Each structure stands twice: as C-alpha cells, then as structure tokens.
Image (cartoon, rainbow, N blue to C red; front, side, top):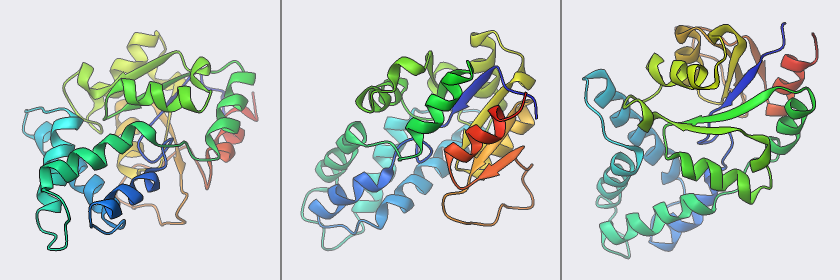
Length: 226
C-alpha cells in the first residue's frame, strides 16, 4: 500500500471521546445513553439538509436536535433550552481517545501531512488537539461550513484535498463512521476505518482500504510500507 501524502482525520468520535458528554446529560436529569441518539439525530438532519440542497451548521442542527430530544424526557431537571446549552458546552472540554496521540506521532515521524475534516466547527477540532498537546502536528482544520454541504457529500473531502494541494488519491480519510468512509471513497480518496466497537461493516458501502480497531493500527497500515 502506497504511503499517503495527506491524512484527514474525522473529529467526532474518531478523535474526540463523546463519552465525556455523558455526565452533562446526567446533570440535567437525562440518561448518559442519550449521547448516541443525539449525535445520530444531528447527523440525520444534517444529511437531509444536504440531500435537499439546503444548509445549516452543526451548532444550529445539533442544538435543535438536542432540545427536541430533551423535551421528551419527563424527569428533565432544567428547561430543555438551558439543558441543551449546558450539554453542548461540554463539546469544548472533550478528551481525545488514547490511540490518537501515538497514531498522529507515527504519521508525523513518517513525514505525512495531517489535517482534520469535521461536520462541526473547525475551532472545536483545533481546541481538542491543543488540549491534547497535538495541535502542532496538524496543519489545517477543515469544516463542512467552508463548502455548505455536510459529509458524506463529495465537496468537503475534495475541498480539503484541493486546499492542501494534494491529489485525491494521495489523501486518506480516517474515520469511525462507515458512511464517512463511503463518502471519501466515492469522492476519490482512500480511507481507513477505525472499528472500535467490533461492528460489521455495512455491505452496501464502499469498503475502506484498511481496517483496524485503533488509529494506531491504521497508522501502521498506511506508513508501514513504502
């Protein structure tokens, strides 16, 4: 497998550990298990907007999805709007997964360029990696805000590659979400799937070029050979 010139990291769940939001859900009287449902609802609505030629940013869609979700909880201890604000503030305090630092350092040691590509705000990704003392390893933070279309539409992937001056087939996206892998592949990039949950990959999506249960394993797969 040829070594990539540029690695694009997805952010939500790939780099950031969203389990850090569980405590904030519980503080407002909701179950921590609502984290996954909230993210899935946010992504669904963002995808729907893109599919219909419309756009709203992650903050807007995520806040509304969360407020509607919280409003259905009888045991909620705060007004849904206030509870949503409290929970979403936690996005700025998340930690990275343990495999993030070694994988990024492995790519850096192989002189592979790195950037992030998120459906969320670019500044969130920058702050996340700065807190982890990894910010100096990443040259750019891209957001779908720059093209007004959510991943997995091809525009965000191609925009990131173009802005970095790298051919699509020399770029690799690393992500935990199969739909993101599929989007990158359809856009002309290569991709690596981080299967942290031991799930089966959906047969209807284009497969990744490499799969591992950790980002470290993917770093080994992509830079272990010339």
